[in-house]
Length: 127
Length: 209
Ligand SMILES: Nc1nc2c(ncn2[C@@H]2O[C@H](COP(=O)(O)OP(=O)(O)OP(=O)(O)O)[C@@H](O)[C@H]2O)c(=O)[nH]1
Ligand SMILES: [Mg+2]
Image (cartoon, rainbow over all chains, first blue to last red; front, side, top):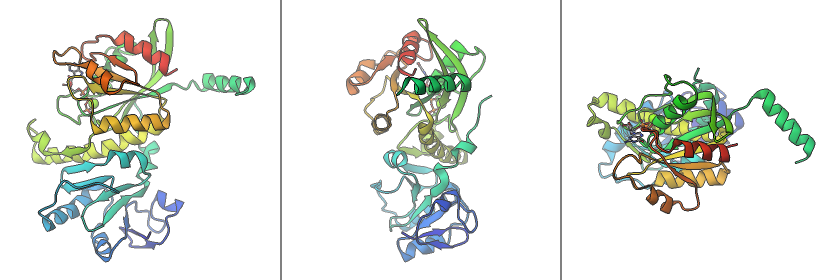
């Protein structure tokens, strides 16, 4: 499945271990899982890693489909219904190594690949 | 396991003084931070808190660890690190926070941080030796969050105790929790008032050693 870096745009045909640490070309940590041309177009609009940036696109997506129902989550771990409203698929978050954020109903997803691998460093140690 | 290997492991454990790492999990507002504070007050320092307790859900949005708490119960000892985690939820909606007087901007920030908090809570699971799964005994225990986490704890073989919290409240029904999860250990407590905590400590010393 092709993945595209959301910062430098480099496309990777295969997932590699390197990518878990970030984009091998630019170090960016958000990848786009490319399923369609539309997904690719959307990927071009996401620049910064993190949920915030995805939210902006999520808002557009919501405006585009006013009739959006409470979604059936299947492969996404998190769906952003609109800014500030999240639906979490706990089962997927528990069982999958990558976090997939759904932002549109046309088969486009943002994947935060390394998020599961960088906690050790990020953890706050209580003194 | 051979005797030699057993001794080596024991020796290493003593040398590294590795504590048993216990995560406190559960839905928002179940009383996780209240329970963590209670444990710390009972065995470590009466003036120290691991985190802020609040009636607003998703108060805890990062995992916090407190190390080296020596729990004693009926002669049994258990040296633990306690990890207080953000509440697990299937939907996080900033509108829910507006009623508590947060501005829209604050509420949206809280929702985002709470979502990231759920991810962090789940990631911690790999590192734990045991879990206290806290449920609010005044509420229906049969939620998706509870079911998913129990399934995962079972699958990973992590020992856990269900803490039926808030039994000081009139409408608390810890029996409902026992009925919902009959194959698991359920200890009713009031983390706020300190009721029945000795029973919980005994159970922890027994299961998490
Ligand atoms: N009556 C009663 N209230 C309790 C008890 N434990 C906690 N509470 C109250 O429940 C509310 C939530 O408590 P917290 O300890 O912040 O809950 P939490 O599980 O850490 O919540 P999050 O961090 O938001 O996930 C607070 O208003 C507490 O005072 C209890 O044993 N009895
Ligand atoms: Mg808390």
